[in-house]
Image (cartoon, rainbow, N blue to C red; front, side, top):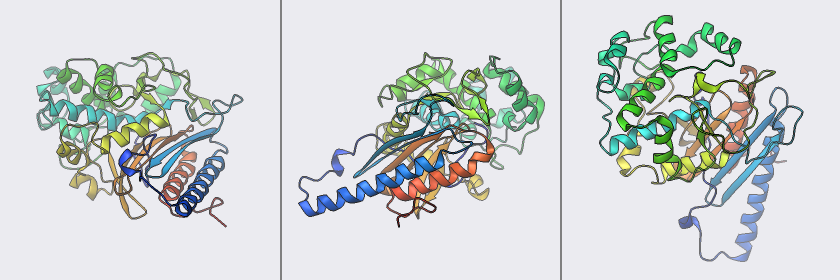
Length: 386
């Protein structure tokens, strides 16, 4: 949520090296060399974790997996003044959820329950569609790739301040759409540009429920979470907690007890762990989510509008460059991130537990350096090898 798309680099991964990446026999000298290299890489990743945890960042979690690579670490505290943060602690993923939402829509499309290029009027209440500017021309695909032109309620400072001033308010999805409709005009006609919009993803959540004939949280669970064994992941508010959740901060404000419904329907809301996000990204790119490989290609294809805008984006996922290789992923307002580098089969996931704008530079540098180290490159800053 809140315009959180990775601007530089991404990470992700599963918890085990794929079986086909293992070799039957490794000479002793080569094994020692590989072990030394792995130990050095782990030391650098640990250094990066420790270095990023300084005011205003209370904690950080990092999980990296790939051929010959498995790192799972945390630094800082679970809450200010509390116990140490653990890599197994869950966290709010915010806009990282968008990738899962798009994946669910594509699964429904594979089984014939949803058409990406159908108008949203095929699934949504006609009175609602009539209130949306250009509503009759907007398609499901345009909601998912941010080319619908819908005004983003998150861009309204009055909305953000209202959320902060009313932390106990329970929001209904339609209330969020209503706020957008009365607060701003479309950025452009459908397909005429690219503009990140949480409004579009709330509508996408409504479309998915109508097409899938089940509540959104059940569709996440049946189509993604259960098949991928993402046992610690759940849609907050709509499902019970599944273990400890780290405290996320906005400056000095602890948002742990804030009602999450301002961001729990399509565009955000999933709570997860570094390990579970790793499983998702690896499953997505390694054939465990979609029945047809062409579906993943559809998801990853960046729109010309987003490329022209300088932010290549497909269906719920951004395209990035990592040390010269194509990478894909997403980030979230509260600090979560997930990245996959197909050529290297490397996944990197995790979070920083601070959403304040001042921490974004810290977050960007941490993610970029962690990805560089995971890909065998030297980081910048104090964690560079002597």
